[in-house]
Length: 145
Image: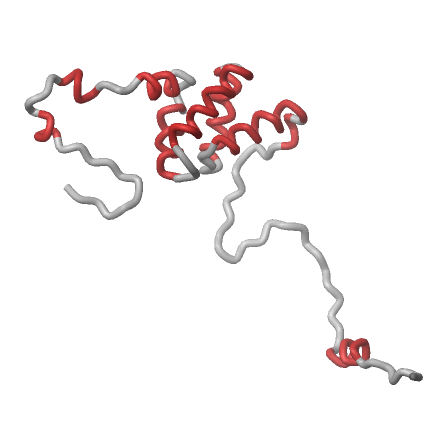
């Protein structure tokens, strides 16, 4: 089977017929350690792989180091939050943890979903002026030199 979408994985079981089942399903130790961070970790690891934000093993390794410093629960919560915003990188997880430590109320509760043409910033009333006003501003008075 062939797929033209990015990030899709297809496994042809026929390619593994001559191997024991355990061998073809075995994960490496690093992946198992990362996935032990919590239920969202496998999905976050796949997101890291698809995001191509640098070296996958390095990004995942840095996240594992964060878990040693801040604890698995904190890192898992940050990964959950980052994935809800579709942000898959070490820097996203680190930024969330640091922001939560400094000011937990600074982060929005839900991701902001923008639709094309939507503007979610402040409403600002702009004074409408005639083009003649701008022309007068741009006119340069003759110099006395």
